[in-house]
Length: 392
Image (cartoon, rainbow, N blue to C red; front, side, top):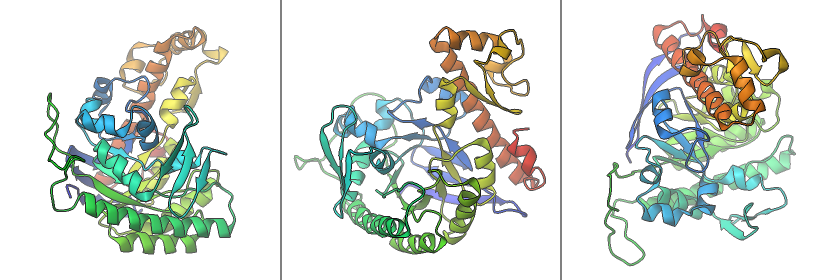
């Protein structure tokens, strides 16, 4: 259905691997980091900036796009790629995590989840089928099944219920997906095949459906979830329900255990993780795809990632510091601007502050992933494990 994944290199001392993920809108070299474009935009970045940075694939948020401007509007305008003028791969999440985060505004049932909009309080409903329907309208390259994500800590009974429900929802999502993206042309609600919207043409989407493995940090539940989700027969698999408050050691153990259970010939996606250290640790445990709001959200709060660790550029100590944010970095921000200037921009409330910090943080993440891929291909990932983690 338009997706092909092949392993091109493996590290001999860890589970790290380099792959090529072919999608309808281009090839993605893995492991890779996907910047989060929640509402069809990475905050503070133009699409030209993202291309300059070498972004291979973006993540867009189903929940937010469903509420505004609406998935039908985006479909009528030619799909998300055309709507946001991004001709490269896009992954959309199912909206489940965002919905579950609406404390006091959500009710989970066997049929799906009822929730109230954070914008106006209006009542909405996502079933497994509806989540697929919305994502198909958006036209992403990779779409996700609806899952129930629970916070840490949670009782065994809560985790078991959510794990089983996630499995049943995944089966329903796959059945609906097969009906909608079957081997026959899709038709509009008027019973006639629709013509593409005028304007620049992008390759027609042929979305691939990924399932989400749940189970918290309980290995028995993770194994049970893997068996059920893999048994459905999907094109890729994600690890959900992590980085929700559990200790790092438990997260890493769960990632290693779960990744080992998943098919080696399918892409593995760790959702919502993480720090630069997390990326290295989880690549070493066999993960191929990552997303996280950390580099962009931290940037807007004056936190930049550097080869020497995090730097809070608003601190008074940088008032007269003429060094670049990271002397080891080659991005245009570090080649041109100083810590003292960035600090001034943040204190003055200038929007350029967040723009420059975001560009640098994304460069740091993407360059780190490039170095990781290079180390795996050259066979020295394990030897350089901690140097790579530090971004050196």
